[in-house]
Length: 325
Image 1 (cartoon, rainbow, N blue to C red):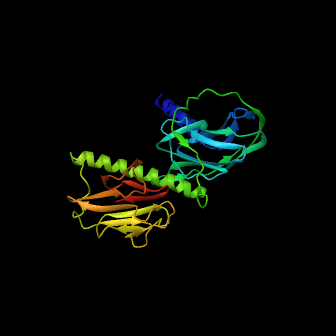
Image 2: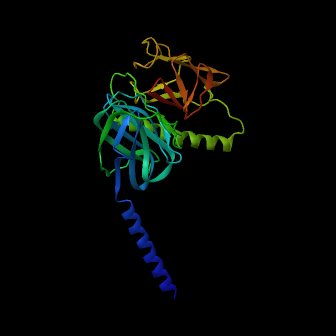
Image 3: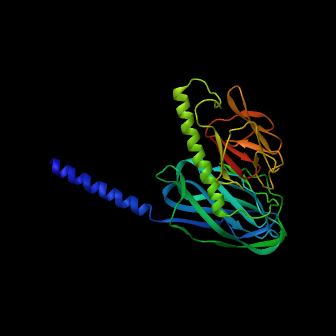
């Protein structure tokens, strides 16, 4: 009897493995629209869809459009926990990027993208690229391999007839991502966008682990002590002109900006001459915004002074990222 029970469990586990393998064998992304005929002034709604047997922790997409016919408004993801990452937008190309700190199972709509029909024309949308992100065995974000991109093109017919005024629409639940085009020198490559997503996911995991460790060992939240330990704190540049470099904070204060005379020189069009400063006070490290737009763990600093702790992710301007540690 025991042998029969054991044999039955063995069959059950084997079937489960086969079913799981089959469920994860097909990964795909495709583009759809609720309709293809619109009037001038109406909202065009396109959807990025995906089917994945593997839980994901982020995704990116690029949609090409005709700016003379369509104007992008925003994107939103119905997936719980998926947060939009604002990126510079170029005219004619929608760049969308979302990330989550926990794995999410997807089967259906990843994100909805809204456009406004500007005039009567025959136009279309093209899914230039798309990718799914997962967490690998080392705990870092990585692109999911073997993803098939299905339907890429949508043909749209926009009539010259102006639509009646539409009632204010309730935004979809989830993280809404603005898609207003901005004048920048060049488009950001897809893999650079994915790199930003991976860096933020990895930094979030590091920050969460550090918070857990600190809560379990110390009752009070204190800034890093510049004088404690032999190893000095450093800034690890994850994205931007100095990506891949680390700067040890051996001499404080440290000025960061586009002026070559700064301690850390970053030649980026969205960085001002003296953008931010790092200094020590009361045996701790502190970050101060000097007017260029500085964010720590996604929150704006707004010309104030904030404490720096190991694992903090700092963004300067639109896309320069570094991790303090």
